[in-house]
Length: 428
Image (cartoon, rainbow, N blue to C red; front, side):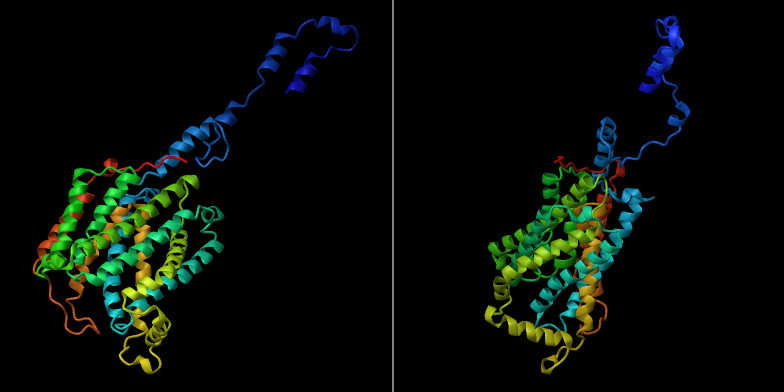
């Protein structure tokens, strides 16, 4: 345009230059206000939110869009992309409950052939998950589902996740070895309390009265359902205060692990410009670091299970023979390897569904779904299941506890989506 203006102002050849002493109004108008194409400009579609260019528009609109995507509403921040986010959360919670019931039932069935090798089953699951998760990660990466940006997220949070999971397993095993079985369901309700506290502290979440009431009713319902008629109160007194506190601390580690995973998803949403971090990235690296810390804790863990560390290789070898149901040690291992493999598959599905529910909702919602599977599993154990022999009977307060638990879930879910609690994470 500048060259065009200069061409208009050049003097004509010869004496004609004296006739142009100043720019003509029409020519000045043409140079100062070039002919626009307003119709083309106005009909262009609005630029997308994921604009990579700079400027004031990106700083205002994109920042608001990413902040909106990072708010974990009770109905699910990432599920909002679908047509009915509440329905997606409900469906994910239902899958989690079903998987949770199957996980509890199949764990007891898996211990029928491996009754002498529970520590082997735990380590098989821990280290087996690393292989399976990274295999899935590899497939999803080459399929284009997982991107290089997802893999480039900081790995320090995953290291902390692995450490928390390992510490939770170690302290839980130590306390569980000393506490009566009837007392553990009561102490396990500390998990929900820890999650609410940690979510309030690290996520800035504020819960409404009906949500807190709902969580309280769920905890009371589980206690009545599981511990009624079992002498749990006397069991807690007999166990001593130290082991009870240690079990509560183990649930603190587990609650911190779930809240940290929620923070990882929120932070990745901001760094990926509103994108979603694939949950197999979290599962793979988290399980890898957990296995690493479990290796360091093996001497301590084997001692908790009554296995001298020097005899651990022979124990694992015998456990593998029983798991495969081969050799002279296979006597009494009927049901292997089918039952242990079913447990590992369902346990993996339960962990994946639980993490997916956490991703689209919150840590507290995933905890409530997992808790709801407890009374259902108790009822399933009253059915004639194979390998378990005589079915168990329902506790005295099962029906009352189940009703209170359902009332608690309804009270928590009663909060309208427009008034759901929000979380805020400072930008880095």
